[in-house]
Every structure is written in structure tokens, then in C-alpha cells.
Amino acid sequence: MRWHEMPYDDPDVVALMSLMSVEMNLLYGRPAEEAPPGAPVGPGEMALTLLGDREGAPVATASLRRVGEDLELKRMYVAADARGEGMGASLLERTETEARRRGVRRLVLHTGEQQTAAVALYRSRGYQPIGSLPGYEDVPGSLFLARSLI
Image (cartoon, rainbow, N blue to C red; front, side, top):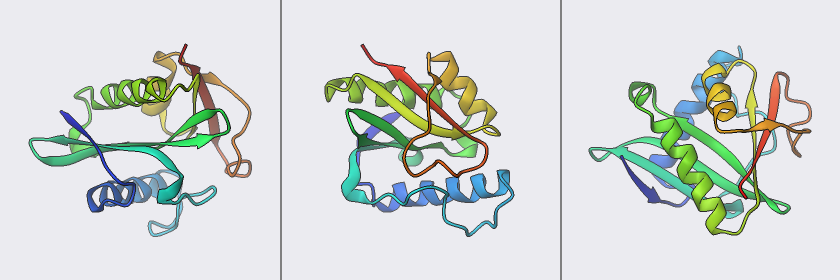
């Protein structure tokens, strides 16, 4: 697995985020073409976007967005055909490392109750429940987690 810093609106990143949106909409019973819930996010808000490739094919992405003194993990996704190979854990570790390099003390995130594999990964890395994040207060089934990076 190779990791690359990319613009948030890079076509490969956008393609993976589109796959994620369709998958999440199906999981949560929303129309496949519906926009993700919560506040919309633009490319200028991102502190970092990572793209992971396997043999040149893009298979994973995640972004970090500044939220006050924290960074928020956004749109972390591993393509279905690349799961079970430890890429999610590797991607999460890489984003945590990048957050530390930026002097951030805490990484926060929004996920959902039905994303059991993601929740298990976050919990295994020491993420704990926190209060809601701005823009997601009314999203049903939300979980908000954070991990101290110091």
C-alpha cells in the first residue's frame, strides 16, 4: 500500500467517496443518489487528503478537517474489494500520524451505529464517545468519537 497526499477534489478521491456515499445510503436505507447527511464539506476546508493505492489502483481515502483545535477524520473509506487486508487500520494510523505532525492533540470523528467494522476499528485504537460535532446533530444513528494523540 502506498499513500499519497492529494487534493480533496482529485478524481480518484471523488470516485472513492462516491462509492462510500452509495454504500452508506444503502446501509442506512436512503436513496443511493442522496447526498451524505451533515454539513457539506468543501476542498478548501481540508488540512489533508490521503489516497491509498494497491498496485496503482486507488482503494482507500481519508481526509482531515480542522474543527477548532482538533482535526476531524472525514470520509475514511476502503473499497469493498480491498477490505480484510488491514488497510483501514493502516489508513487510520497514517491519519493520526499526520494529525500529530500538524500539532493536533485530538482527532475527532462522526460515524454511524450500523458501521460496526468501523466502530470496532476506532474502539480498538482507543477512540471514546464524545458529544456531537457541528453539522451532525440531527443525523439519526450517529456516533461521535475522539482520541487523544498525546
